[in-house]
Image (tube, rainbow, N blue to C red; front, side, top):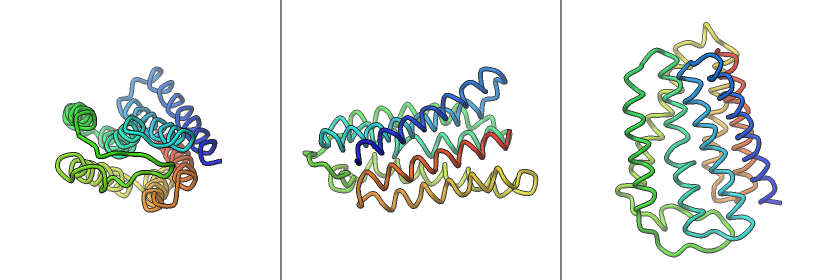
Amino acid sequence: MEALLAFAAALLALRLAGGLLARWRLRRRPELAAWAASLGAYALASAALAWGAAWGWSEASFRVYYLAGGLLTAPLLGLGSLLLAGVRAALPIALVYCGLAVGAAIAEPLTAISGTTIPDASEHLDFFPVRLLAVLANSAGTLAVVGVALKTVRRRPIGNSLILAGVAVAAVGTALLGFGEAQTAVSIAVAAALFYGGFILNK
């Protein structure tokens, strides 16, 4: 059941990412591309959840999960919000960060990983540099999303409310990591749907 829920969440997030990418191809608005990339990373993280639940967690599945879900999703969401607000300087910084995150996730040594429950990052990753990078990047991305949403909430009340709800659901999902893949997958699916609705209404 856990694997099926995670796989369904991955398909939903991927479908929503595809919808945003289609809109970007029509409008060429950079924030749409950033949001599509973020939901694509969310889909990849959920696919790694399905992988771990179905066949047991391994070094490869954990690296994919941590890179996509822990290092890329929130910063790319924040990038989209900053681009929507006209902060174009955020784009080159985000691109450099994404390259750094991919390199760090690949190069970071891991202790042995096994089992069918989501591995605790603190038990397998050193705090510096990868976990520190995740904390800083997720904090910055979340602050950007929330800050832009609150700043423009009067102009776009429904869309921004959905985005803020998505942030809250994603935070709850992070808190539920220790409870298993099923709860985390459901939170990913709900958060992705809320984000998508907010993005579409804001555009």
